[in-house]
Length: 551
Image (cartoon, rainbow, N blue to C red; front, side, top):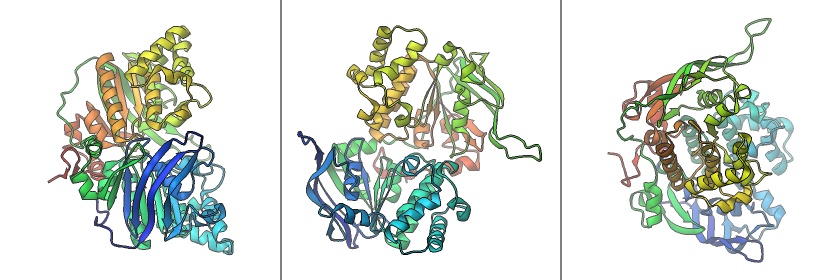
């Protein structure tokens, strides 16, 4: 069980008060998107806002920060008060002065929030320059370096001069937290800040927020779809659905005795960390990985140089109609393995065999039919779909590349769209017109329409809310049953891996350290590293299916 502190009914002063908030579209229709939401956040309290995609969680957060795009969205009625001051009545300059100084926000994707051409230290210092311009350059740097140490980053002096691309996902998220907390605001809004992080990094980030909260008395609004995180950190929980406030209460009230059927459905959709009994598959091997190695960097003429071993002697078989789950923390080699299999990255040595036939190391060297037989669904659907072309063009492109007529390609795409729960009318729309869950379904449809023998899902459900995640996982299982496709399922979510996988492989620093059926690996782990992963999983002590903590 994680120790994130006590979970009690708040008794401190009210820091933020939201009353009867209504957010509508800015056009003539004025369609309501958030309907009469009310809540208070007290000093030192963590309020978790949960709900499926499109429930209004992020819109509510953006309205507090004054970040709603004025040309498309507006606060139609209600009030938002921070420390007794009405935020909706403030002019833009006054509202900007409160950001970072009195209230701050940590966004979901740090790579889109950080400037890729500026050093991270300068980006944090920019906050101080904006709000406290009288402070000297040396003082600013010392303050930023101290903050980098406070958020648990190693060698703060060196990282001050680093660029975002030189840092891991967990380090980038810590940079965002440092930027948000550098002026010690009274309110921190965290919008899905741990969604894309592995369980050990996630645990560190959650502990960091809680420690800083204790030290500074900061109030936290934590927007998330991860009920494991909610079980660990929430003092109170607000449940939203399609812009409406469903219910609000303490953590134990909502998780143990949810009053609304929607809340019960959300909580019951969380997969259990305890895997069901499954027999080992004995079907034919579709994909074989033999002695796969991948190193980055080259030896220097004047010494050893710097080499990073991303994969070391990886051996793996994937059978027809089997889901092999690959788990491990960031940097363990999971995604590098996937990219070597599909040929996006060339392995340094070793082989990938498809039904016994060796594949060329690079996808550029593989014939079209070999490319068709292995498809991949990436983690981020925002970057996986070309924003400049329609969904119809994106989904038919692969079929047309292998010689399918456009009319036949559109017919096949329409069939697959019905399987993933979407209508053929979406073909003429663009990616930005869909929610994150819908975009992930579209990416899945694009892969499945090629009728592959092997499907690689690289963190393909990590950004989805629990109801959509449950649907996509059920869809993957249904597709596997209908087509016999072998699935390489890469995830940092041990709950998902435990439920969907027929076989689990645990990776650490490029090596396979443990593998077997889920009941063996998850319930009776042989390695200390595997036990650490399981212990770090958020909400590991909570039985969501039965609305109670494990005995």
